Length: 226
Image (cartoon, rainbow, N blue to C red; front, side, top):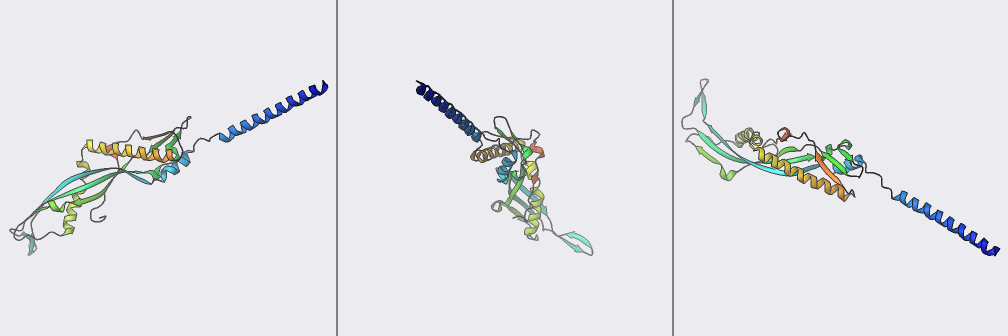
């Protein structure tokens, strides 16, 4: 009888010890599975690796027109040469791209909510003119008898004067469309990068003060970057 009672005490003690060990192990397992909230600095580094993001494109057309006449200097006076006029029409195609410089992203541009949703506030896009091409097949020149052929340097100068006004000639509707396409493309790219890195909830936003009329426009000087 005493032996059975002693055996019962030992059994209960073993069960209590095993239960205690199990609780401790389960608790430790839960601690090991605890995931630290993502660091804004780490997320910023991931986004910065994408460098410059060209996310949308817009082309525009413009026709340059000019007329010139030749002149000669006689005794210090410039005299126009008769029948020396040149009239030209030169169509050009200009390509603009919306670019978001992701290297400008800082930890302050990233927030992490309580449910681990990551919100990335992107900088305003820059509009870059990436090419300006003369449509040579559509050039029109009318030269009178004594007119001289214009040099490529002269033509390039006329193109340079015109290309800087092309962006302002683009309709507001087209500009807004370019901006919307840039945003949508950037959203997809940034979300894909962070989701692939293991983050589950991503939100991409922009400064509420963004204004298409105030976007920085970089102009390439024709003939120097070609």
